[in-house]
Length: 304
Image (tube, rainbow, N blue to C red; front, top):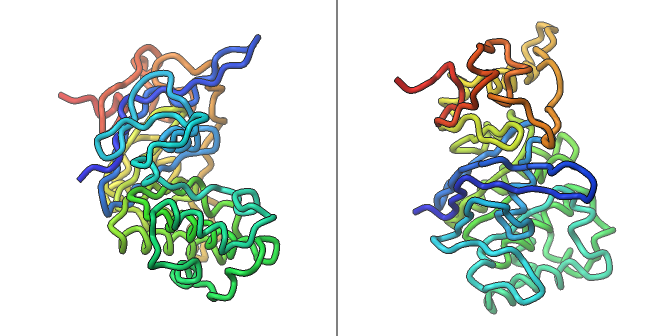
């Protein structure tokens, strides 16, 4: 069953006196129940903007976002529709996502009340994420970054979500904690039957946990596919470049290939294919027309 469906989503940021920034420029993806989808790409590609819009924090300019067949409405001043509390997000910065003035057990209990769950305690959820039960009486400043992120995951799980979103949830953690937290999110989501949209620029971690990968570049999804297939045979030049930039611990001492140039300004994207100024296989058609077909949006793979 499809939990999340994003169809041709466009999200714009407007500032008086400045050009419109189209952070998401027509992206489409889906997440099924029990599935882990990794959304990857360089910083500035629009991954976090897409995630925030899926949660209702951002407002789309066009396109649709639906959760369990219902449209996701942007958050306002009124209480959110209870049917949308099934979407929960774990944010990038565990230091900012927890209230420093409240005990962590009280913050987890907020989610339990939302789900009307009287059989589970905050200590039970701390135990599920691998933390001692007595931590429920402590404050956020008493924990390390990895522990805080586990607490944030426990808080998100308290609402019994059908869809869990991790918005760069491991980027603020040290290397020893990154894989642990990523695997924890996958295991907890799969065990509960929820879907997981895991956003990261670290493809090596995404490879460990994702069933499918969606590659995003400058507001567009340029390639999607099963993780093992994309890893074995990346078809879009941008996907190849991302995989080629991953260091290989083979002892050869060879530096990974570096992707030339930077992500263009989304307020003034290139004409034609958005990747063509950095693409080693650029053709004339790439400079003139934007490829719209999928699962690989590249003129090298134009359908017959």
